[in-house]
Image (cartoon, rainbow, N blue to C red; front, side):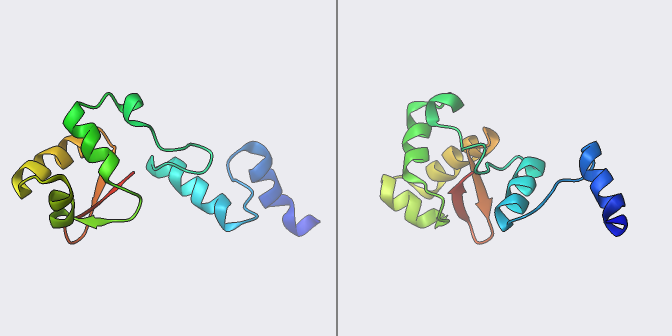
Length: 106
């Protein structure tokens, strides 16, 4: 169709991406932000080269945000120890901090 010629050309040139489902949008956002997408699963602890205590922390975290106090309680650590480990994992891009001192795997 003549009215679609411009958008089709952008897709053909690779300047734009064809979006047919919400998953296509999420994959594209993940590619731009560095967050894992369905096509690019999250790294495993071995791929991240984690220290044993970092690996233990990583395994405790999930995709569901958890408050720092809950994480500390699960691991029997002080809040200070927990924050240090979480910072190390954030620097390795293994976890991310959300508002309210909540953390989740990336």
